Image (cartoon, rainbow, N blue to C red):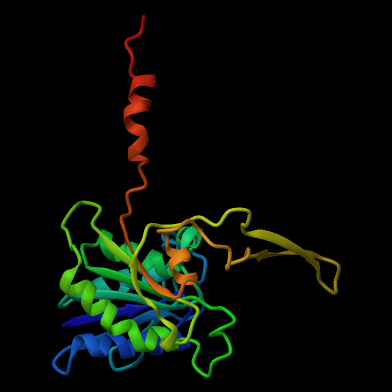
Length: 265
């Protein structure tokens, strides 16, 4: 198996090393693991692509490349430049430092890479490590992902649905904020929503008196509804959420047609 890995934390991020180890277990001795990751951190860029300016790419070692662009750019670089002779069988994105559950999904460059892979017709899985008091100060905060990641990916490859729809499925995996021994299992979940918290801005003045704004994240340990990703994570479980790039509110189509498509009197 040929696997392409990327992330949004950057080419030197510790989570990418964890993902490389996971990918090598999946690829096997006869397989190949290729890396195309952002040269610098790209957290929060979502599904951004560098449409209006070129992206520099550099080979850092065998099958290892850094691109000065977004995670989605890295997927495109991998498919149409680095691995143009033979496409990967699988694209893995992560392991992100911090969760990509609930509303974080909409901002995540880790998810953005998986979205681009799915749009390009390649099976894709995004993996993220939730941080919290029980694991943030471990010698390896990624322990849960490192220990359980390969098994989850293998189970998805063997048992999950991989369709060929126009907006095909990809999968979002979040490892809970606990040591590996504290993981309670795997839960299939929907995307949750953290109420009463959101991104905000925090103003600061520079020494020269200029005003700058820092984007500030909201509280991450607010439980979401049962059956959703962050709720499962905070209960110690690995969440697996099937996703598509189609943003249509399908539940509203019938009602909206009734309201808007009536014959003009």
